[in-house]
Length: 250
Image (cartoon, rainbow, N blue to C red):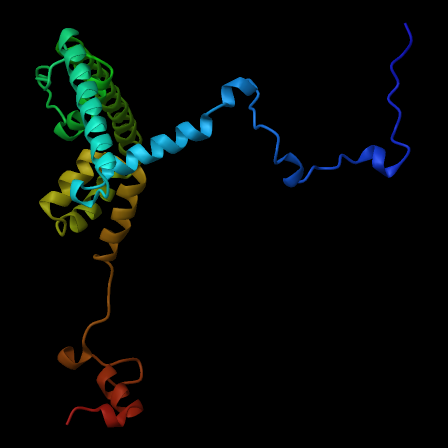
């Protein structure tokens, strides 16, 4: 079998596909890949009629200019009403209620905002009261299982933090320092720290201990009240007055 050889273009025109102009295609029917030329017949006319019908439905009766427009709108309104009535009748025949009465499983509360958003979808899909309640129960169980998993994950993480923190060699001394800072926290802050597990985090306890130890370290005193002399036999107040005479108290 001879090999298939693709030869390169020998001239510029061989390698370039010349795009036809819009004018050249003006008399050619527009046909998509999944339809025939026959399918395209009357498409533009149909689109024009649908646009006109939408205009009539959206126009107030007193703004309609001709009796023909008023008659056509009345026909469209009736057709729409009949269609809506059929949808409602079909829904009732299938057992679709006008309003769903959904109950939350024991120990849970329904999200009313979410229910108000999902019920129109239930109606559109023809979901019955029993089916809607079944779906509610299913998703409630999914959320319950997720909550249980999340709580177990938090507990595992918290237990690991407690074990790691309590393994600090001088934990008792660290906690004494932490207690000095803890007293400044509100009850709400303490509860939030404990609920989140941060209150057991080793890095948090060590950071708090560092701050607590600062409260115990020596600090400068007011030499004005104690009269304590500095190394150059002058109080700090006297030194300040010497450098900033204009700032001295009068």
